[in-house]
Length: 627
Image (cartoon, rainbow, N blue to C red; front, side, top):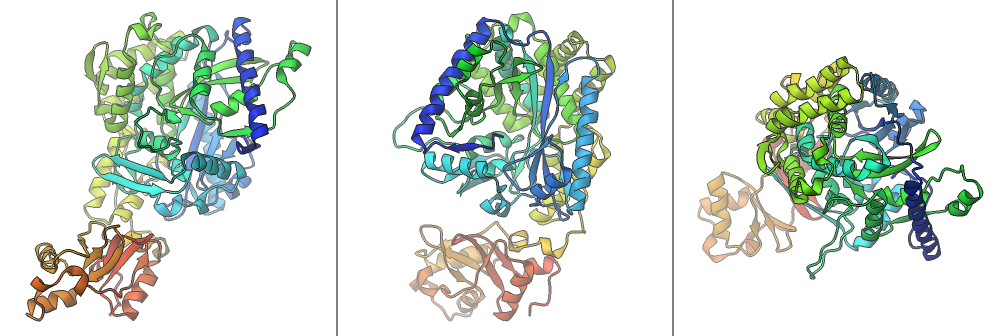
């Protein structure tokens, strides 16, 4: 949603005026279709490259505006968070060496970003979700200080009426509540645009929906979030929940999320798709509009309508395949925006993804012109969710049978993509280069598989945060070499992380044993004895930390000085204890332990315990001298 001059829907008069204009835009769009006014005789491709800025310790930087100012190029623009930027590439004719040109152009823009970033002590990284993002970088302090982002946050929160809740289960599980839309900033995408003729739009759009599952499966690149191993393409679930305007209710009712795959095949014309979206999704934002465009067109038949109201509304809903209206080359055009492909892992991988998807789109067999007669929509939707969960190892339902993504791509989709690119007169060298990468990735390893394997290996010898930084450094170094991900080697531990980059959350132990304040003391003792631990946090029914059982408790029990059968935990726990915040520095942690003669420190976030730091944790990180 790149519009700068948006306003809140709280202005009722402006909102009503905007909605009237929205209806006019739909009427104009209908007339453009009826009059065959669209640029249907050429096909263009375009792309938007989102990327991350990271600091010297491989964590999110917070200097996007400074880097953007240094770049000083209108192709670059801001994103929601201070550690992301976006490149909007100029469209190219879909022919000849367009993909080689795309790769060269994108690489040159990224090189410009790298040089500007270096001047501000940061680096550029292409990744679906930056592994080292923590809760710290998801606070409002990291939102890009531009009014439209704060306005979007306020409007979405006002509609929800509550904070955002997130729950996701993969190999690990992640559950939390968050107070802003900034979690959306974790998602970094490579958005691909394909111009489509107006008379074929609905058939092409339905085909784009049908192929989404297998395409996503082979391109998955985002298996980690906050140190948890979740879906192969975690962005899918994360984006759906991070801007969810639906209201939880005791009533059982269907509500469409603003980030959606859809619920049925499209019918009619592109206008019918827009009409359905206007009907289903509330207006979030408005803006001051030009004079009545309909009257203006009647006065000047050559006037090309921008359909500003429709474009603004379309920019506040997020289908994974989004229909778009635009004006270029003196004529209006229609295009499909593919929004589900992650950024990275390299430019050549991204361009290969694009060539594969665009080839598939143009290689559509005529038997799929009517998808409703060939495939149940819920199969297409199910394929998409499966691919997000398990990547290229997913099993897809296609043509009434089940095949893995690998089998489906090798036997069905790659031949269609080759045919589609040949149909568009793409150079043979480009076809073989980029589809060859997809073929090798299908037989070898995907980016998501490489990330998972390397993170698991690194965690065998490193704390989770160290493993995430080592992984990020390895991704960066591989990107600089420019080789596609199926050729990447194993990550190695890193030793160049500065002490200032480490906080309490970096070294704490997160696998915790706790007891309730009303539990029998004997129960607490057994937990400590069975698990050979010397500190046991005590929580109340709300989950807040209210006490600690430590070595003094153990000593009294073992020496027969305390009859634990007579007490509950709340009666004997230590109620006066020190805690640290997850973002406090290691130096502060060491000072607190030393000055208060402590052997452990609970780490808390909003009164709830998220970890514990003991002497052993510090020694393992080579932070001695606390006695």
